Length: 205
Image (cartoon, rainbow, N blue to C red; front, top):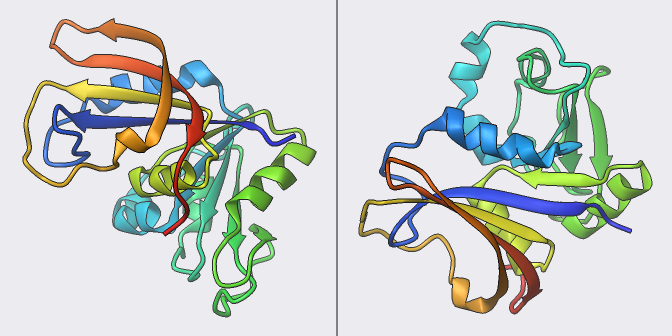
């Protein structure tokens, strides 16, 4: 069996994921409730923070922390050692496809190769499940969209902020069949609402 896959996003009232302030301490404090075994990110999320990652203190691996797995079809990530030493994760895992470009040899970074032109997320989850992983948390809006398209998300949590941004919605949620699992309202008007995802319509685009 594949692991349970959960995703949490901060969004505006008009379902946009950027252009407003987010209380990151609260966001990640809520995320710890799932006690994930694996944090799943995409390369774009890591590359966008590459300078900050390089400059951050090297606290060492967190023995009891989750594994960081990064979908990196095009071998864009070059900060594996720094990511490993940030103090958040127990280790890092590079997720590559068969046609991922050649990358420098790195004996310290584990790799998992699935798919041909792009990483096969279903196979990744299957392999992780065989390795004893029970919960995977997706930490990227774009990757969350992909996982929803492929019917891989079991629980979706939204931190809805009381602002209107006016951009394109992050996802057509009418395509999802959601069952409400709980809601909490904070004093600043942010609403944390959780849904079980029972069915998905569509395919990876």
